[in-house]
Image (cartoon, rainbow, N blue to C red; front, side, top):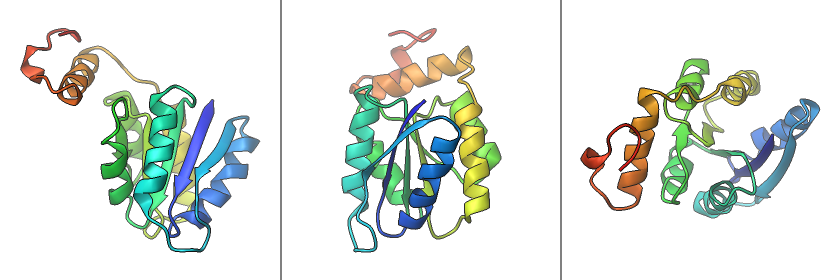
Length: 157
């Protein structure tokens, strides 16, 4: 799987540790947005990673900032991105199986490396269930396109 990583200064340690971990599992992984220890703005990384995923250059993205909230908000402004703030293995699974999240957002301040690895493993291994959830994802796309989601029936407008 091709995975784009991005972070601000508060998530840099987690992202730098994830890179070799994911590569060791056979993934093609690139850090697209990073500023090292220098203070930087999370929307910059969210934009670069979000666009790369939305354009299909990467299959999935992982973003980390202090709380994960800012990255989630910024990434979700990009058409085609379904970014989910995940805090444990269950929310990782549901974000994929029910919401087809293509970007995982994590807190660099609140999650330790062992939990981050478990979350990432579950998130990458979980498939989208489709079915009734496909209709709901289609409704999200309708909103993204400026349309009323109530007009979406059975996954199509």
